[in-house]
Image 1 (cartoon, rainbow, N blue to C red):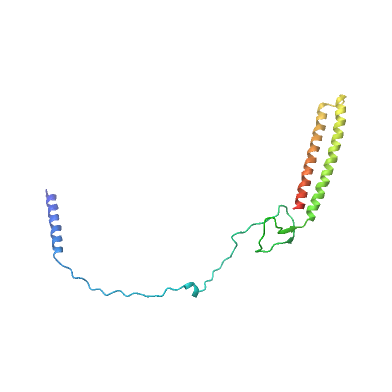
Image 2: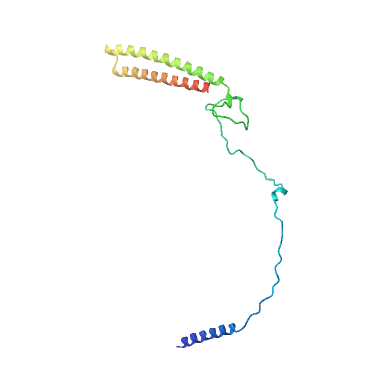
Length: 169
């Protein structure tokens, strides 16, 4: 009950304070107008020079390389030149490529000679096997040697093709 009386007393006190505040009329405050700052808008960039450090790079660049290694002997394009697809930009020294082609052709000739030797040897071994003078295992070894020699010719021929492509490009 004491709490209830305290609450009622608090409500009356707040109401009395609010009524007392309403009776008083406030006088308007006199204030001076605020001063303004006037300025002219102009293009500041035209009056100042700004300097920045940095590097300027093209947005459209291509890293170039050759499909085969070598020494560059001629450069046909300069920085900033417009180039089209297929234009020759530089030339490599052809001498190493010519030597590679000669070596590949020599390897191909050697592989062909080895294949012919293995063909002759296999023919002899088949004759001997037909007469039961050698075993089947010995004949199989010669057949495998012939197959290896045939693969050697294919490999040497592909090396010649690669060497020709490197020389012509």
